[in-house]
Figure 1 (tube, rainbow, N blue to C red):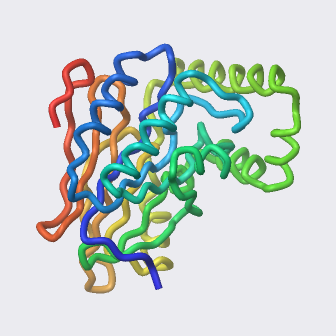
Figure 2 (figure 1 turned 135 degrees about the vertical axis):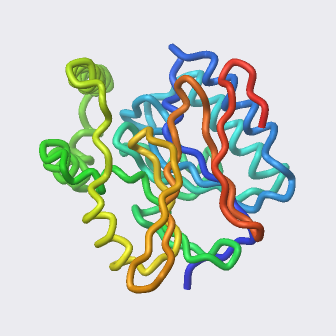
Length: 250
């Protein structure tokens, strides 16, 4: 039986890093804004620009943990996290500090009477064959455990190389690969949900489908680069919102 909430907020692809103090300030402004009535906050991956282990603490990571824990305590918000392609190594120790619950991919909930699946969404970009191969290997528990046993300096170097490779690849072809619609249709059929919420593609939008005479919705969160994005779901329905990073107004 999936957990049930009357309402929820969703964010994704914030890519928190010391190199973007404006985004960091916008994130903490968002935490301050979260309404008292909010029951659940879902963070759907790529929360940090990169994460190479809970044992590598930074001032930023400490501040984020304190901010989330304060939100959970003062406003009684349940916080959930789905790993992205940048922060799949984020573990239970850091999640505990944040007072947030780690979710498996494609976790299911009942929110405002709607069957909802939350995910980062990278697995649906099935046309990116090389990335899907990498994802399949790096997400294996034994591989991840071996990675986390590497010296801290080595892990930071590896993260830097992956970021540089991703940047070079995007520079050569500055278009994010979108989801494959056949893969999405198969996911809806398998999961049996009415609403899917994900990020990853940086293509904020609301997509509507009809499948087997059922109305389905795919809500895509945007990244916090030029503007920030969040989604809401409550008894009035679902909505997608954006705001200025430098002067956030929610």
